[in-house]
Length: 234
Image (cartoon, rainbow, N blue to C red; front, side, top):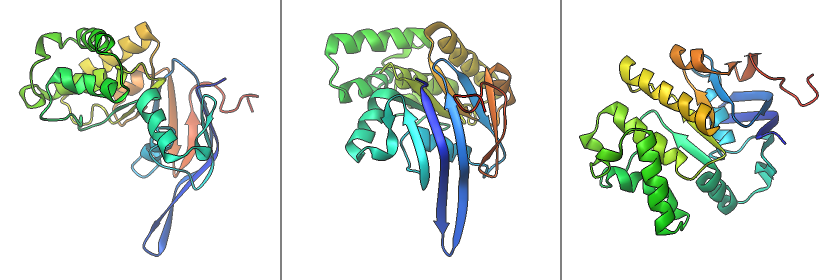
């Protein structure tokens, strides 16, 4: 079964007396191991799509399936458990906990999972070594550069061994040198660990590395440079 299936997905927001159609009947399949970018102008529906896949928002109509889970049928506690256990998030502004050390920031999702201490130590150390920040494990976020903080955010997203990682403009707050390093790091994790990444981005360098590019326009798929959008290939 595909990692993510989206069927006739629609999302309508009400702004005052006006209704805004953020998504207009999307059909999409995402497979395990993809390094996919979702692109399009502001207002095209990129972030809304990621929020639907990430169980952060619910559709007006249509369905999102994450493996065997039909998202619309799940309660809030079940959705929270999926977000905690199966999805990693990387944001533009890092969203690290300022009073925690780097080690504690990466460890925190495992504490929420009630992961045993020995296993937590192994996973956190392993991820910090992979992102090149083990020597900074006792530092606080404000003692690190923007690029280093984003590396911490990536380690935190991956420490639970999620099914997929959703990255919303992950290089948008970085200079070009740090952005390039972050892209190469995520690509290496995709290649070496088989981690599935789905990006919302305007960054042409991420687009160049992507195995698939989905272009949105006015809440619809304008172009899909990858695998077929439906299982029967239609």
